[in-house]
Length: 150
Image 1 (cartoon, one colour):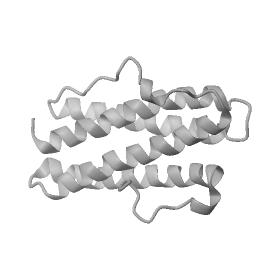
Image 2 (cartoon, one colour):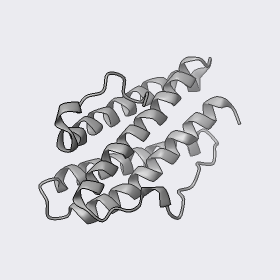
Image 3 (spheres, rainbow, N blue to C red):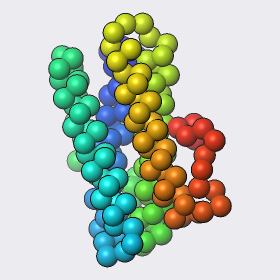
Image 4 (cartoon, rainbow, N blue to C red):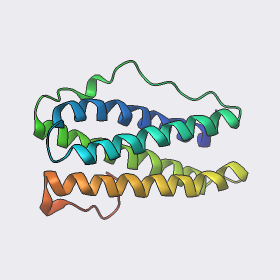
């Protein structure tokens, strides 16, 4: 497997994990003022995951499947834990997309040229979602200078 394919698969794995995590987050934040953000984030990750899987399949690759469970996401039994998990999930996705971008930037070929803007867009989207969650969790530290480098 090429480094580019491995980075792309890692980004997909991060999206699988995020989609799973937002199910846990939504269960804890249901009925709060945060639920609209939960739904928007969940939908964004699910849509991105589905697009990545379709793109990989079209490229002749077998997309990495989701795990049955993600034990490192637990416990999520309080509002504070759910919000903190949302921050962590977005930071992890930003890291995965930044890694794909940097790998694609150092790789020649049509696939790398196609993946660079996609990775940049996904990194930016995760950074924006992460900022929204950090504004709720720790307003004084809502922004990061370099998302994806944590």
